[in-house]
Length: 185
Ligand code: ADP
Image 1: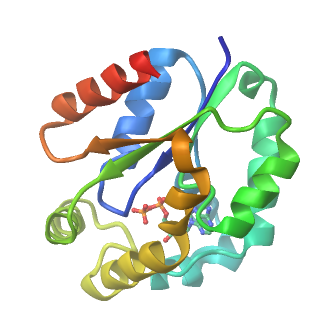
Image 2 (image 1 turned 30 degrees about the vertical axis):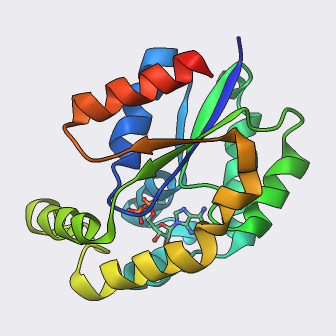
């Protein structure tokens, strides 16, 4: 069965980790706009040069650029039998663009829930360990604000398709919860 799954949740909720594990288990591509944009920045492409400072500030890259990247990615043959979107859509306009681009609408939306204090702690820890350009205190705060303002309205937008999963616990515990709710959906 083709599965089209979307992961929603604030920065630091563990979306990237859980999305990669789930996509692997379901044999569908994990499409992460954050990863694609970071690769472009690392490779120094034209796109990377355009988005580098916006990402470092914790702001959203323009809808036009991101929608074009996702459109191209969803056109690739491996996405025909389903995919897991991580980090896209990030606002209502992107969700509408996705509906236009994809004939079969998203089936399941997994919302990973983690409270704000825990998010900041996790992101600061990651900042110390990994040195991602946007993991510093000021940018972390900005990314959380952007999530609240721009992305969290998608929870209502997707309504009944949204499955809430508690993101507190070990990676394996959270993964088991996700697998369980998806098996029931
Ligand atoms: P996080 O969820 O931890 O903030 P991501 O890897 O999903 O991490 O995103 C990192 C940055 O990449 C965002 O802060 C933003 O600048 C950019 N980005 C990723 N996806 C999108 C998107 N769909 N629209 C606009 N900007 C995006």
